[in-house]
Image 1: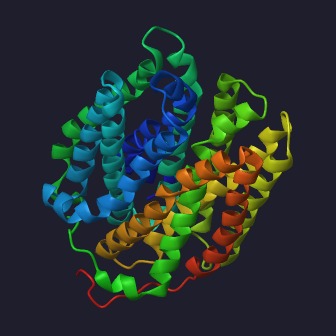
Image 2: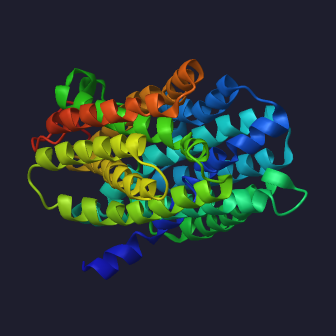
Length: 395
């Protein structure tokens, strides 16, 4: 197949990917508004930001039950419906529903996170770099849009921050109906059924652990800092609207990296040097934010986002390229994301505690600088070209 045919075949997961970050990242620019409306403490806001991420890790234990829903297509359809319903409940509920909906959103997105790499392995294995890059970029683009329009919508009417949820409810409804209508029409042999089995032998494989820790470190940086980034920029002199717009624009520019890097890196035999470079770039970008000021911060934000935008799709790509069959891909994806998101769940709280203790965001920003160096070091081992072989492979 040529690239156009591959993109047409992968359209279903591109549509699913539109929904996979907006409901999550939209809370970040709204934190000052939520804090004022509900009088939430920094700890409560950190917990709110961490709740969905914690669900990403815990949801790994639900995957055997989720597997009983059916094949990968049915699981994705079910997850989109649950995700849309959770965003709707967040928009109409009270502060308790804000936390409960975040819990549900986290579970739904976690299942999608686990399922999409399996879909790629089942349907477009020979073009995994291109497809992974496009759906990761799709996630990034719509996440950037969500961040950019959140504050203007929140201040547009008496609905307040709830209006910011409406576009993503509409998108979720359309996407869910698309999957419901298209899924039954797919030929029965068009995809493999995803086994609910987890290959426990991966837990003894250093290669699997290096991928999981690489995934965890990049997730810690993203969720630990991106949660607070609009607040950090406000502290550095920007208005909340401008801060959200800057985060959105730099994320959007970084998302372009998300489609290019996995496509071309999938052609490389050895990813170790590339992954080290990604970690160092991330670290340098956040170091620049510490010492930068004014509009020069945009340049450093863009640089740090290049590193983050490359590390996430590369982490997912590793679960595809270093596995042998779809069942192993699924197990490696679950392990990497369970371990990784468990690590990430603590990151917003750690950064928040450091700020509360020092009242200085520059000190808190040392965390991603150090983590970026660890990301590069771990990437050297995760990028090893050898396949992670296990004895109990699905036939």
